[in-house]
Length: 146
Image 1 (tube, one colour):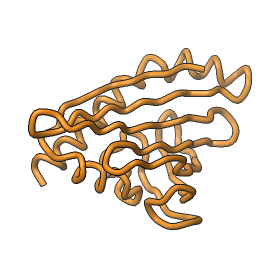
Image 2: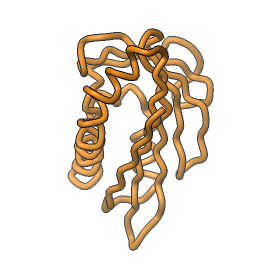
Image 3: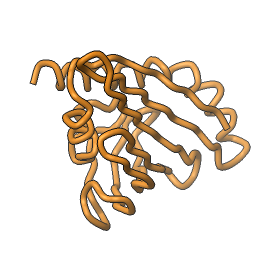
Image 4: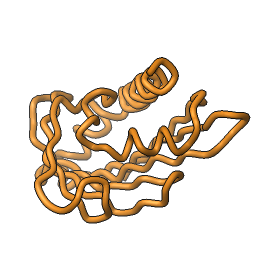
């Protein structure tokens, strides 16, 4: 298991950021890896909602996500898996701060087999923080520039 966390200050209220991030159909606008995502079960933006996404990093693949916890406007959690290599737990924490918000994105990778450990430490660990920081920068651009 391996975890990472990155934070970024965004000049927007928590409610606006939460509303944007909970709309998983817009995930591909800001995520470093997701190219397409669609609701497959449940209600959009609700605990238990399940999504199927197409990702292109580290290679083209399909992953499945389920929202596991929500606390508007401060917390969004979901679990994702490709069912072969990793199970990942993702969290967005949004805290009101100085007229804006501090957004923290956390991820925990759980390798599903021996080879997944190798993939994790050789290919994913070196780039995850950079990818997540870039994702938060894209969120900031959308929130601050409309």
